[in-house]
Length: 375
Image (cartoon, rainbow, N blue to C red; front, side, top):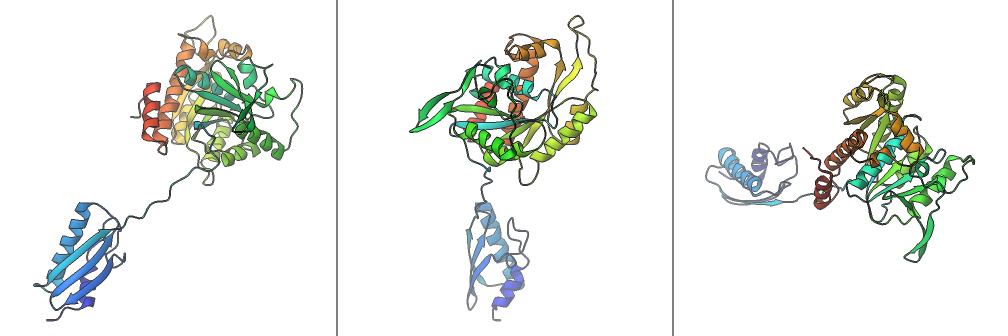
């Protein structure tokens, strides 16, 4: 009884290549068959490099040939693993030297307190021991320089590797760059999209940010030119969406989430913060009045399968702190400080889950310093 190659191939049609979902023949795993009378030598390549997978394929080949081709064939199987490297899912945009994480804070509409959340998130991260910077990308209505009481400051020039760069203004341990540093208080910024994008690129790449754990970008409201410029220019680590509870704001917040989830943008949404969740008057600190509706952003987060990062009440001291240039998260031991610390820990926890491209030591360090868990 002679042994034929076609019979061996027919037998090997019954064996599935590990991890392929196809037979050894369909997946082109059988590279060579040599027959000398009753001796059969096979060279087989598989994609699974484990010893267990190699041994299983070898045993199955010998068994099926003995059953279907020749019961007394002398079979030698050489199984090798050829692992195809998966392409690295590299983030788009140029990296900023020394900046580890870039988080965009966005809202679908104006007036929801996005800059307030940004400033207090930055302060909370700084108090946890992180090096933090804010880029105020709201070119038409910058406010970060006001919220950090540096309205009259000007970024200085410094030389880095022979190049002249802007040195961000520092306040409360946070490095800040804002178009507000370069315009007069009563001066309106009347720019078309390309001019705004050019100004932003200068503040991003012509600045000496130094070593930062987090650069937080305060985006303008909506989904326009500035947003596209940012996502194309920078490898964003994630985005935080800010909304108030009422339906009109939630409809716009949903658009903001959808923008970051576009296939050609694909920035992870770390979660949604609900601002102005309820009103608590100073004389009735235990009362909550849901002026704009209740749990709107929380329900939206559930609908969009993203994290609800926390809620911030509508209280006078938050507004006053922002107006006087001292973010309320600076006030140690207060309920409001605890609220912003809680939101910040939730952001960090989501960031750790999504930041698979960071080295393991960085992920561990973020987890340890923030006191949050990835579980």
